[in-house]
Length: 281
Image (cartoon, rainbow, N blue to C red):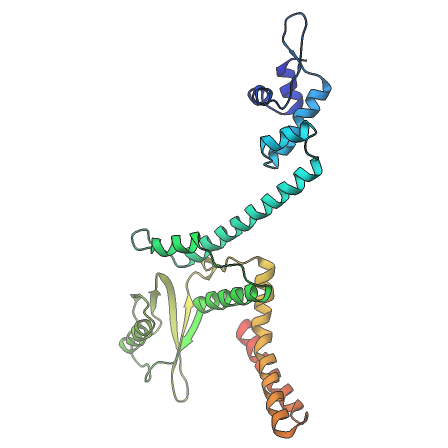
């Protein structure tokens, strides 16, 4: 068959077929009558094998060694697997870097490019399993705080002016950029470019100001969905577990036994219910 037919049957373009021949990956027979290339079923299979390996990004020298029998196919595939795993790790790190940077809503004219390049060129050494989970837990906690947070201002909030002043004070104490977009007892504002709505929660002794982001769907952790789900569960479960352990440790130190077991169970149960209400309400 001619090169056009070979291209149709193998899925490899005529240009690439000629290139592979030039690189020595295959040498089709020549027609005795006109010296045109005459591709056989074996050539078609070779082209399909080359196409498959190129789809796996196997280098041409490696493919040539496999076709010539100089390197076993299994060995070549194992070596390529290692290369792809390294590339996948680099891509995962790049994706995480993009997600972290995007959450900061950077501007081209104010971005600390030197710090970014330093982080990219000298990445933090890969940490252990639990260290990775701890870092992701901190990321989730930070994003959740960006979506909803509250604070207790100095003094009561009775006027829109006092409300605005309390928000400005909160931003200044944390070095955040504050911009008021709507005055009132339900003000709207932005912190570091993230828009929020706020409301007052009156208390018996002190008022509390609660802030909710206007677009929570835009604040993404950048974590795999399964890991994020597990970390959300951990945020609910860990506080009562820590309370239980602390009370039991104190009870053991004081009485030398498990007399405080029921107290620890009740306290941790109360903390768990509180976290669940915080999650669902």
